[in-house]
Image (cartoon, rainbow over all chains, first blue to last red; front, side, top):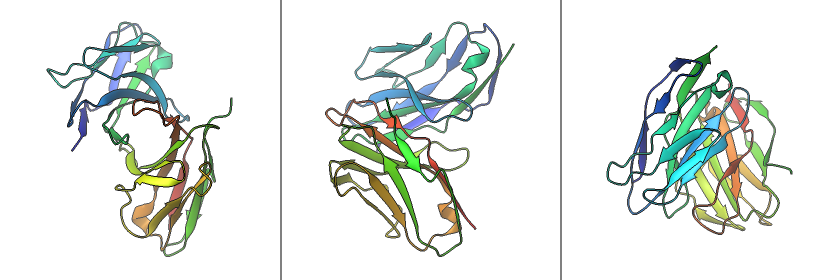
Length: 111
Length: 115
């Protein structure tokens, strides 16, 4: 079945540092891949997605590329801000549409 | 526009009691999903509706859990004979339902505590 493994947190960075949160997946067929974010006190919201191999999803300065050969979908941002402090979830969806989630990675950005 | 809403936001109950959790999806979304999230974990799929019918209920943990969506809009998740292990945040999401790649939009969740 489908699964997702993402980098354990917490991750603590200084403002303007480079961010990478690793995510790898297993799946049958060709899943869609997503990053969701949960800001403190708020609900889950989609950050970006990619639906086929080599697609790059991007939003708010974050990027992730669907790498079929390495079964990865790593999240990156060149310069993080304090407002990026949140929990980030990687997930995949197969033909059955249900999202399979990683455990989440907590990010704290210090000024 | 209005997002996904869930009521109540918090529910405290005693072991053995029955609870109902409600979800109002985004208007026009035909697909509706229930997940639950335990502390420190990612959400775990429970059930998915397309219209009024349950298209996939493979995530329901046992027969104490049941969900309905009688008119293809509002959904209710019902838990009988609650146990302490049912304590979690129950999340509802909806999507357009036209393609498997459609974005799922989440509600704020209902925090269930079973004493």
